[in-house]
Each structure stands twice: as C-alpha cells, then as structure tokens.
Length: 181
Ligand SMILES: NC(=O)c1ccc[n+]([C@@H]2O[C@H](COP(=O)([O-])OP(=O)(O)OC[C@H]3O[C@@H](n4cnc5c(N)ncnc54)[C@H](OP(=O)(O)O)[C@@H]3O)[C@@H](O)[C@H]2O)c1
Image 1: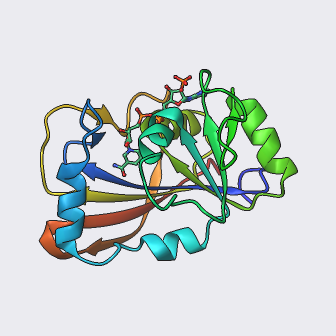
Image 2: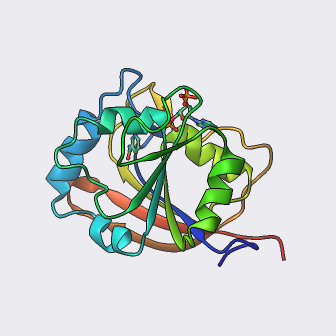
Image 3: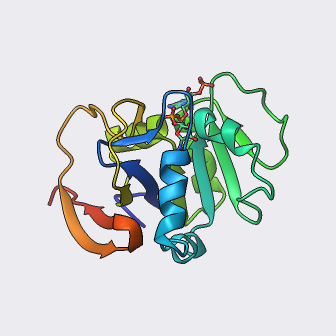
C-alpha cells in the first residue's frame, strides 16, 4: 500500500551516464553490451520476483515484441497507448489513459507494479505514483537519445536506499520517493 493506493509502483531501468534510456532510433546495444560485460542479471530476477504487474508505454511494448520468449509471461501486462488497437495481443491489456489503467489495476487487486518506458515513468512521477527507483548506470555518454527524466512540474525528493557497483563500471542505485510528511 502506498499513498492511498493498494499497490506500489517501482522503476528498474538502465541509463547512460548522461541520462538516456535508448538512442533516438531505439538502439540499446550501448546498454546491453555493458550489462553483459558486468556479468549476472544485475539484480533483475530479485526485483521482478516481487512484481505482479508490468505497466509500459507503447514505445517500450513495440520493440519488446521481438523478444523470444516473451519476457512477461506469468505477469499481468498493461500497455498505455492512444493508438494501439485494443485486444490485438492477448498477452497485454491496452489502456487509453492513466485513469482507466489505475482503476483497472485496483479492481484486479494489484500489489506491485513495474513501471517501464521513459514517457510512462515521467507520467507516473508527475502524478506522484512512483515509490521506488532502481537506476542502473552504464559508463558511457551517448550525447542524445530518449531521456529517462524531464520536467515533472515540481521537485521530487528522494531518499538513497543503496548503491551497488558491478563489473565493467556499472553502478546501480536505488532511491525511495519521499512523501510530504
Ligand atoms: N534502458 C532501459 O532499461 C529501457 C527500458 C524500457 C524501455 N527502453 C527503451 O525506451 C524506448 C521507449 O521509451 P519512450 O520514453 O519513448 O516511451 P514509452 O514511455 O515506453 O512509451 C511512450 C508511449 O506510451 C503511450 N503513453 C505514454 N503515456 C501515456 C498516457 N498517459 N496515456 C496514454 N498513452 C500514453 C504513448 O503511446 P501512443 O503514441 O500510442 O499514444 C506514447 O507514445 C524504447 O526504445 C525502449 O526500447 C529502455
């Protein structure tokens, strides 16, 4: 339970040191190659074991269609999009707006949400919905690309939870979002 909601919302995402989650054309090799060099799964399995629902934007869902096997088997998977056809992919539920998504999650008895995709993460931050962020930073500056963070209308105070240093200079930090007292 968090901030009056029956579920928690967590981010687990990889970024370049200059704050991008993908190149403009969607390329992720700069990230995946360094993740592989670091070795292991960088805590992903431990994180995902505590998650019952994945929420992502169309921008994350569409490139993920090439993954074999589908990485979200066994978890409810919701996609925010104003353009994807509803019901075309039985593995996901498409929602047209945040309000309908949040109502559906509550009705399903959702407990723990993994929020993925830059725009969607910023939407959740703007609405005060994120509880925890785990950011895995790989040591490269890519100069331009799709950003993780951007204006959310106000400062978001954070409390540092932990930092782990993996091989190949990969650094992972977890922060909790501090709620107004
Ligand atoms: N580095 C990593 O760990 C990591 C993790 C995840 C994704 N990625 C990469 O990041 C890129 C995608 O990120 P992104 O920031 O471009 O996009 P995103 O957040 O995944 O998706 C953006 C899309 O989601 C929909 N959307 C967002 N907010 C909405 C709302 N409130 N209501 C309705 N629909 C909403 C819109 O789809 P419509 O246009 O259909 O309305 C929007 O175009 C991909 O290249 C992906 O591979 C990287």
